[in-house]
Image (cartoon, rainbow, N blue to C red; front, side):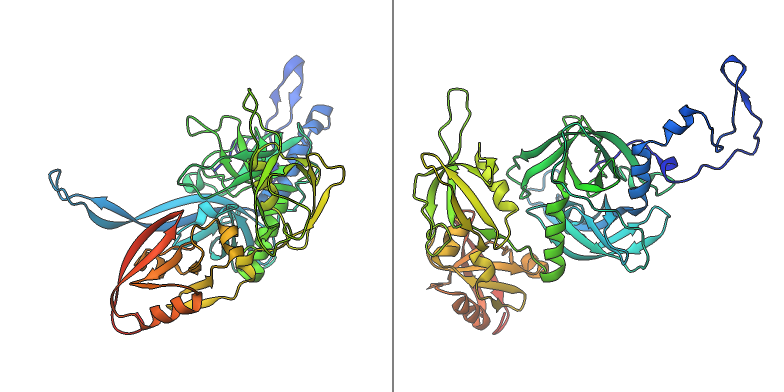
Length: 466
C-alpha cells in the first residue's frame, strides 16, 4: 500500500518540445531546451544516486490488479430482521516486482488474497494474466507468475547491515490505473529503523516482525512494491503503514528482502514455507516500574525436541539469541520467524557463563505423515510435539494442515482446526478421521478446537463419501 511523486524522467528521456527556442535565464543566461543536456555542474548533479537507483529498478516494478467475489449481507427492507447473503464483485490493486526474466513476481499476500483473477501491468503498458504460485499469510509474501521472456528484473540486494539514515526509495503504483500511464511512482527517504515489530489486530493473522522502517512515502496501492537502496538494489517489500488519516505519515514498513526471498523460494519449490523450531515456549519476563522487560522466560519444553536434549530448564531467562537482545516476546518470535531447519542458535541464559547452542529442526507438523480427507483436505495426527507447537488444548485429534478454498467455503472448516470428534466418535488419529468422513452420510456433527475453543460444524453429506 504505498507510493509517491511520479519520477518517470528517472528512466525515460523526455521528448523535446516542438518549439525549441531558448528562454532567457538569470543574468542574461539562456536555458537549453527541455530534453537537452547541460554541461554545467548543476545539470550534472541532477543525475544523482537516487535517480540512477530508480532507473535501475523501476522498469521491473508492476501494477497488480485483482478481482474478488465477496459475501455481503443485505436486507429486503429496513424492517426485515433476516439479512440475505449475496455476492458482490470488488477490485483491488497493489504493486509487485519481477525477480526473474521468465516472469516470477514478488508481492504481498494481502494484495492477492482471495483473488479470482489477477492482472499484472508492466511499466511499458503490457498486460498479463498472472498465476498465483503460492502465498504465506504469516509473512505477507506472495509469488506470481506471468508468461514472458527477457522481462526486466529488479536487482535484489540484502537486508543485512542496513544503516540508519541511509537513502531508501519506495517504488510502486499508488493509484493503479487511475493514471493515464502505467509507469511507477518513486518516493525517497531514509532508513528510519530496523527490526521493528508491529502488533497485529485481532482480525489480522499477519505477523509484522523484524520490519524495515522508512520515511519514504508509502501509500495505499504501493503494497508489494520494492524498497530500494541508493545502489539500486531491492532491500525490502513494502507492506504497511502507520497512519491516522489513511495516507502516508512517514511511518512505512517493509519486509526484509532476505526473508521474502527465502519464503518465495520455499513456495516455488514445495508450495509451503519450511519453518523450524527449537522445542520450547517462552513468555515475557516481569516488567519493571517503567513497563520494560528484560529477556524471556522458558515456560514449556516439548519432548523429543532440541531444547529437551539441551541444558535448558523451565524458568530459565534467555537474554540474547545469536547476539540479538531479547527485550520482549516479539523479539523471540521474530527470531523464530526467520529460523531455518539445521540452523544453530546460540542462547545466552541469565546466570550462566557459557551460552547454550541448539540446532533447529523442522516443525513437527511439517515432518508429520499427511492423510488426505474429502479429496481436498490434508490431516495430521496430533502428537505431544504438535500439541506443543500449535499450543493445543486437547491431547488427541486430527489437525487440518491444508484445505482447498472450495471445501473451506462449503464446510466452514479451516486450516489449523483440530477435529476432536465426529458425531459421537472421538478422533484419535488423522487416518481415523479420514475414514469416518469417507463413510459419512446425512447430517454429521464435527467438533473442532479452534483458537482454544470448541465449536461444532454440522455438515450434510449426500450419500457415502460426502
